[in-house]
Image (spheres, rainbow, N blue to C red):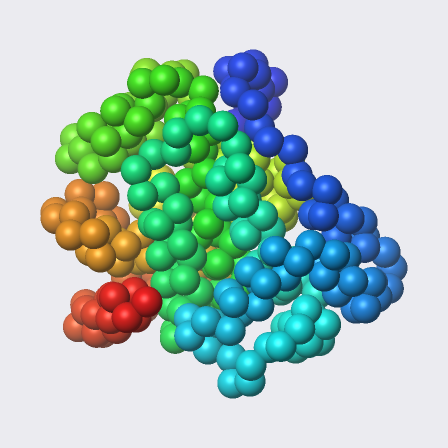
Length: 282
């Protein structure tokens, strides 16, 4: 998908893209320094007590699989690294931004992204493919465009429920027919406006054209391709968790995704059941 920046900007000009929170702006400012100071990063995060508590609860969850308990933001930064910690915070800030905004979010809007973020993180660790912190942030961010559309169009909640698992058309195709834009493109612009690296933003933009992206370079394996493939598995696990059968999008992409990651179908079934058990266990 090639975006015409000027044309697309006009299409979404009436849809408010929430600005990056001040704390994230501060963190990016620190990251741009030649020698970022760990203590300054930790102090910036620690100023927000609620976010600090959420970060610690997140990184200490079983899905991150850390061998030691993280007991402070300073400890998190020292153990995980600056960029890893900031990636996690970015995803958590997105959730808080939409939780605090006006307007109705789509059904299970945050339950599913949290499931997907945690599952994608764990898959990345399990198959030693992709960066867990990037997968966590991607899982939370990739469907943020749904909330933007829901906040802008009064009929979007009903549209979403009727279109999310259509067999004939992908939801982004139907969104473009109805609204002249789609949640994946909006998610791309949101990610870029929040300072997220372009390669991650492009996965957000392309997550509903996985077959095209995973087969376009004559079988060459790329970090972005790995991220996209893991995301599609995580999405499928989440749909299985909610009892959505058949998962029409997974049916279309399954063979390409598993082939790209080099996972056999029996191994995939074991992986899927393991991830579902973790979600059910909470």
